[in-house]
Length: 289
Image 1 (cartoon, rainbow, N blue to C red):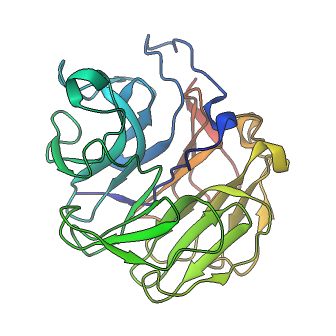
Image 2 (cartoon, rainbow, N blue to C red):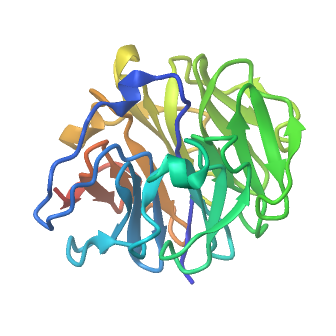
């Protein structure tokens, strides 16, 4: 199974992240408020306000992943190394669900059906990532704390948070990266300690390749909306200008890097436009408009 490593998600108290509403694409899907993206088994998955959309890089065969009774608003979204999907967000019917916050759910069938894992009605993880090569190892941020789970989100332990509101998380087997209000931070010990990592504007999304070499990040629009690429593991960063959506003017651009190829990645804006690069961000082409 080919999988990816990232995931991007955002903190609660940011109305501007809800900018960029989607409109129906050529495939007829209204994909709005995209908060996360994954690439699994040759398909792109978009976590959105209207549910989980899935399609191919060719731009064909886009549809909703869920069964009829499993549609919900996805915020935090990630896939672990066993191919299990995890998501948080908001239920489609809060009254029936018992609250406005989804907690953590998992899917064993790539988003068709979901099982409740923890925090039902009590948490809405916008920042959520899976640690590579460690099935069930999840890291999330909620209300000022980094949370760590090694059993697929059934139980959680508190870790030290970066020194600012955390908007996004990504991980390699050795390093956890956090996009925060005060820039990018990194931890080499699973989130127990954090150090500043180069970007100093508010970082709303971050993605890292499995080998840690290729990274993408997006600033908040209010900070200028610049999207960045690093090809040396975050030591240096270059601004990207290879596609119109790479200048963030509303909802942050989210990225996912192919688990099998650090040169291959996808990005999406808040409205569900999807672009693809095969040269680590030097050039991009549209695969879903």
